[in-house]
Image 1: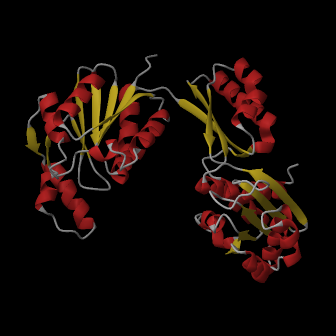
Image 2: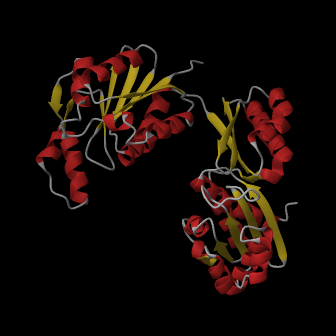
Image 3: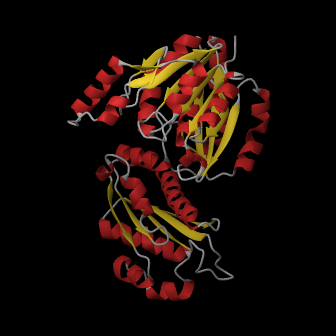
Length: 415
């Protein structure tokens, strides 16, 4: 079974200069992995004719499939089409179907066809033209010396539409790629090194099934992979994943491509419960994350940002003497905030967060990153101390996720 190799070339001065983050390459790489086509190289090249030619030549000598994004528009810096003509020795042609596609796209959106739009139909003579479901620049497929080159627009929404609606299916059929089986275990509350120590023995015994440890802000993803169609091997692969899960069940919050706020939403809906939030150093981020989920109004009643001590007292009925005795960043205050907001909104559950996001506000006893997070579910209460890092935004995100994880543990009675 031949193992094909893919390369991604991202064209654009703005990407090289750092003004635009190269999310296109990340997306393409992830999608190609789903069809068992590994990306071996990712190249970023400027809007320079000679540089583009050089990158195409280099890719042609080592990759079976090359996916290129950027430079297909009608503006002067969009020079990819000219480079294609030279490298592949193809003429520029007026493609009537491409023009019809552009006209159809604009008509659906009640937009007028411009001269710039017409230029989108002037393309290098290609082996295949890819319809653009989300824009006006068509994609192009050309073959050279056994390598397949797929050119797509650099606009993410246009590129993604082409990849999902055409490119993946095209490559799967063309290359007769084997089936890829993947599983995911998404964890939180355990460090990557500790996770590996717990799993090292079983992973080594099942080395034919690769496992990737992928750290995230709130935890570690475990991604499992098996390529093939053997039913016995597929069964063994799934048994291996379940054996791993059984060793770390406490820390696994999902086996799907979803975040913790989605998991919390499912649990609250399933149990017909409601939630409220009281936030200090997280500044409303918990409410933001929760309401990003469609249907969150079914369970999220509301939240308050009590940033000052005065607001904690006035809005949440935090006791002034508790503030005086323990300070705003303490487990006592976190609990009083959680209790107070639960009463205020008459919710079944609540989350509260108080901490020092940084870079200022710290003392010798209470450093930057210190946080106390509390969760309440009816008469059950849980409060934990956390020591995050020195990055303000990361600390806020981790504080929010820690609160949701504490609530998950309460809802599932995880000890």
